[in-house]
Every structure is written in C-alpha cells, then in structure tokens.
Length: 197
Image 1 (tube, rainbow, N blue to C red):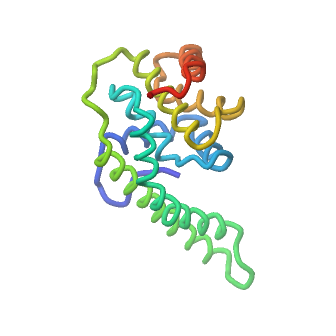
Image 2 (tube, helix red, strand yellow):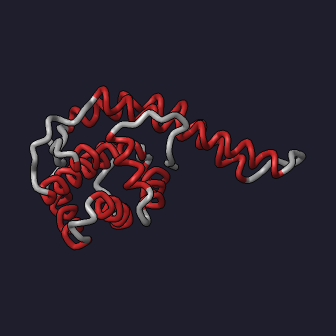
C-alpha cells in the first residue's frame, strides 16, 4: 500500500517505488508475493530499484544482510500495522462502521510512513553501487536476477504463479522494453542459478 508519505521527504528509491507500485497489476502482484511467499514488498522493490538504477546484480550475501536488517521493522512495525488495518476493515461489533473506517484510514497512513522509513533505511544502509550506465536490457536483467535471488533466499525457486507476479513487476519497472523482453530476462535469471552471487 503505497502513496505519497505524510511529509515531503523524497528519495529516488521511494519515487521509483511509487511509480512502479501504481502501475497496472503491480500492487496485486506485490501483495500476492507478500501473502503467498512471505516477501517484504520493500525488498522486492529494492531489488528492482538497484537493477533499474544501474547498480547491477546484488551479491547474495549483501541481499541477505539487507533483508535481515529490515526484518524486525517489517515484522514488528509494518506487519503489525498491516494486520490492524486489515482487521479494522471487517469492522467490530458494537463499534460504528464509520468509526472503524476512520481508524483504518489513520492506520493506513501510519503504515505508509512505516514503509517509507524502511525504504530510507534500506537505501542509506545499502545504497546501490555506482551506476554502471548499462543499457536498459542489462539493467532489467540485473533487476530480474536480484528478484530471483531474493525469493530463493526466502524458500525455493518461484513457482509459475509467482513468476507471473515477477513478470508484472518487471514489466512495470521497464515499460519501454516490452513484456516479451522482460519475460525472457526473468526466464534467464531463473535458469542462471541463484543470481547475483
């Protein structure tokens, strides 16, 4: 759930995330990876941003350290806020629906701020390497390798449905390349082992 944060703090990673997340099908794809795979949406977007910004394929060790660093914040703060927001959506007996809905919206705004804080933490602790100036195809290949490496760290190779979600996200990150190209690059990343080693 992304929208403009309550304050005016901006960062290229946050701006990239807002643009990508608002693209058709991306929110649903990210949330499906979160719910089905336990993926941190911010880590998914970080993998894409590093590749898209020319930072290359991430080393598996660095990717693991980044995920480990933000996990407590994601689990204890963002996840708790998400759970409260989702629970409020169903309402509570004895509490007027308009009151629970107003509270749900307030929690959603705080959840967005928590997502923003996590992204700034990631971007500052693990900034992408100096851009290499690679062509868009190489940047997309690096983003695909980063995504595959991250999901493999969570469990095993993404299944068919999860690959569909990854294709949707990659296509939004690199709209000028076209879906066929991003699909091919994702397939190559999947065939290439852990990626970013």
